[in-house]
Length: 274
Image (cartoon, rainbow, N blue to C red; front, side, top):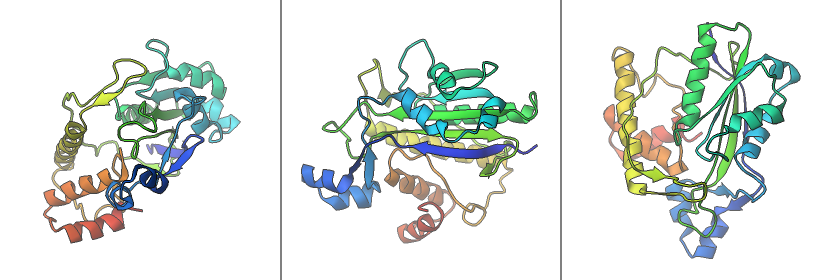
């Protein structure tokens, strides 16, 4: 049975800031932000936006009335929930006009919550327990650190909505070919609804460790038969900021024997940057 993404929509909030202007205002060389971070703009989430509005706006123009009636699973992944008990998914279900016969819940796992919901929803579809029905997975987050705070060049917010079904039009997922790797790490904390703090260097190395670990597991699952350089049309990485994708690709390339930065950059420009 085929499963994957049928439709996709992104809502990047309603305000945007040009990084060049921010760099000039902070007297920081523009090259440091554009060339190193690969960031040209960032969202500024206004006071009238929150996790719910980001999620709903991401999905509201994506779904037809027929889609809404076919959705029986809604998962919202976020680390910016508006309540410690009531899940964001309940607000989203009501505001999108989804049917009452829709199982819904919220996932919290920092940046992985959306991926977790995505994979669980795909497995639900593949199980075939409700033939013809669909799943809606939404990721919705925004940084607590706004303009004038630390790391203002890379943070922001957005909502992304994925309509998943057995009739994928964008991406078909091979569920049997997946690698994963987990280790508890104390790199970021949000102890209250208004405070955000963390260890950026620790987070960076945790990202690369997890990348290496999940890649090794993926190769093992595939029986060692992985043509990294020519076997994939594109390589897509989680991107806390654009420049992180180059660091990730460089680490993976070195695993497969490509170590020269010029060669890595050429392969990156072909397979990742687009």
